[in-house]
Image (cartoon, rainbow, N blue to C red; front, top):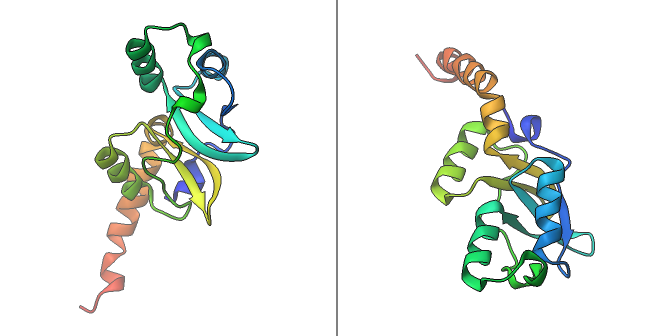
Length: 141
């Protein structure tokens, strides 16, 4: 099963010039644990619930006073849409992130979350088993 088949294409986003209260509002509105930070229409980072908590703790400030622009630009890890779901599980686990932007030629197409993987675990497993059953067709016997 490929990432493009299970990724979330519609993702919550905030502008880089906004404050964390807008980011948290978007997370609550869409019932998600992350938002994409955009500069214009270009995604530039992801803010997770964990990062919000860390920022609040570090600054001891209200959400309305913490700028989104204070977060690093760039993504900790990314994945391509034609990557298999099993490889994505490893990437999420090794990168210690809860979601990955799905990127094709520098364009963010969507987000792959742990929930996307969990929601599709039976399909991922079935796909893997089918491929494993056909393995003998790929090798010389």
